Image 1 (cartoon, rainbow, N blue to C red):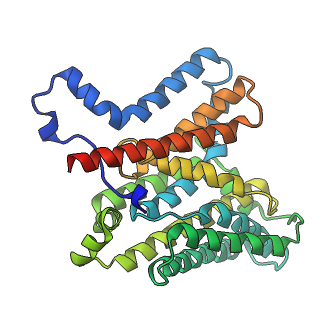
Image 2: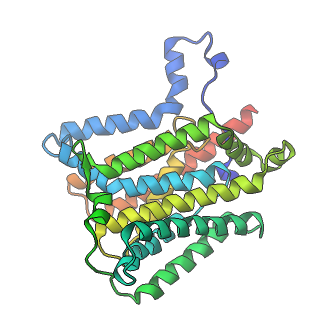
Image 3: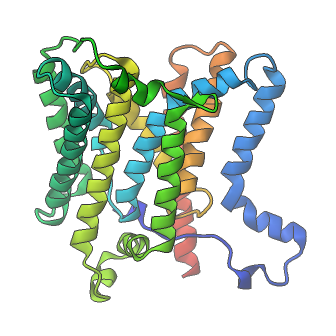
Length: 339
């Protein structure tokens, strides 16, 4: 997919040499513009809503609401780094959160084993997606849309359109319900995975190979990179994070139902696409993805506290996705013009 190629636009030392302070700031503006905008939104809402926005309760609510989207966005960005897209992040979470509950309530499986089964199924689904894309040579958009639809159909069949309800162990509830230093533990999951992914993608051969494949798979193959193995691995990593998000969602909701989960697809993709417009414009990156999720969380929280209607969130997500894709496309064209 050409729109996902990995071409970063961060300024080099040679480009910055000889520039004045003002010129350097202007050169960095496209790189850190989204970060600055996020900070300005936080400041604006804090001034306009001093009693509700800059509070620990609001911070807890944002972390609790957006941690799952952050995990899905991080999962989606891994195949994006290799020039692919994974739509099962929005469909898989439907089935995984249902199974995390039904394996315990219907089959009596202990919760740690149930969680391990769901995570393993997430890995296996990612493996299948990788085979469809790399072996069967099906476009990743079509392949993952098909896989995701099958997963959603299985979720409908498994539930029969009913809720999966039952008494679950406290240990399972603690996966989402624990607080650390006064903040939801889910925020610490996201922080840990973010740091791990940043280290892997930026400082190991795995990351360099994925970005090389995303930039030009044929060139990567000619340089001896086993592209098939890394693309399949990228889909498996995405599948694992999707399953993890499903487990956390199950612990949070305490019920499983097929009508829950699909609403995460759009914001997850928005966060991943926004990640290619900041920090390292033109290339999906971990901290850019987190900033993308953060600006969605801050913007939607502030608008809702102003009394925004129920349709504000999907509207905000949709418009932001279009803007993100437009900026990413501009960054690619600009990079191509300089090459």
